[in-house]
Length: 500
Image 1 (cartoon, rainbow, N blue to C red):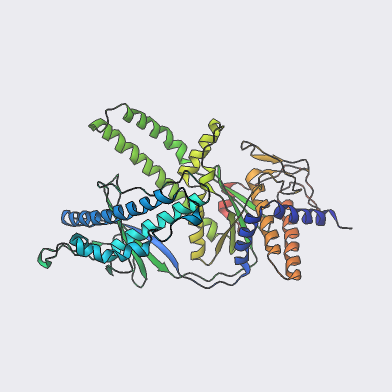
Image 2 (image 1 turned 120 degrees about the horizontal axis):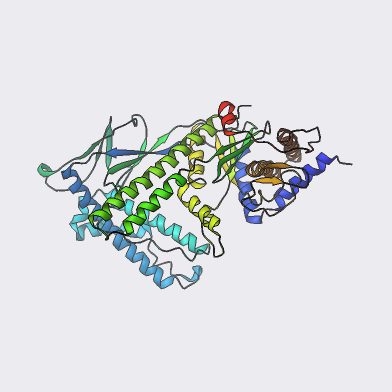
């Protein structure tokens, strides 16, 4: 007969996989196969944001070039919208694909447009092509949302004349020498009157010896400041599976709840809720602004002050998330980090029967970036040092008891899970432990050889023993629970930070 520990491990293995729908299971298996599958080393593309000082002559030229790009965007978007209005009521297969505007068709018309309207010759060809590429990407996203049943999705809007149209120089049209970058343009046509668009790159960024892929120039509408967004390639360390894994449960109250596979230990990092500090001040200013006559001096004074606070709140969030994501990546022995594959857009949408607390949760998800933006920070920082972040479904990880696998609906306010099996544990720590068990179960399922699959099932059993021994005050070899579960505080985490 199987021992109690073996029976629980077999139940965990079956339950964690059976709970997933077929599409989520296949998607998770594709991600898990990347762990043991050898991958080719690819350079990492990073983006540097650089503030530039623009003279009045340069600003005048930039606005002329941006207006040309805006007009190209307007006519290309108009053509696409007319096609969509004619075909949106038809099924996808019956739409007129021959007359459908695409990037290739519209970019092929640029030489004729330049002959017909000489003003477009003032721009480098890459900036006009970049506008069409950007529009193509926006429509691809729009069509994908509509095909997936999102009827609220709307086609891209036209660009306003009073806003600076972002210009992209892709691969050509720019030159970087030392800390100076020069953008190519052809306005005015006389060389004697021509003003160079040359800017000093200030700060810590240096691009000597690096392959620059794209340069984008844009203006921040609120501050009227100009920036360069420079995409460049950076060599990374090669990833390999060292057999040590770490799962992260991302959230709003707790930014990170992590569990490792080799020691079964966990830690929690609280989210720095700067929005609670700034929200009251922002709402107060917004109320005062709305009581003023629109666009008058006092209205502008309150509006500028309000947006200054919003920018400060966003910068504080980003700074904290950058620091924590860097610590998580650098202070773990695991080469593979597992996070939940969450649909943040759907989670942040309000529903008809939402209570006041639910609406506050939705607003927090939209403004703090605790899930989406933090996951992106974590992904590129991990790739930079030769580690990998994979995403698997975390469906029902909070509902399942991480020990006995009993499913139970739990309110969001229930921060401590108390199960009939005797387990008392923090909600996010439990979710992180369940996610680790699901990953190990998927890792076993993804293996074709029976011997290798059995080895990973054994790893799942070993992890369960270590995890429950760590999170019970009094435990024995069978990992029974007779006390309250405990989690490590943030202050203790910062001292050792998962080096065990």
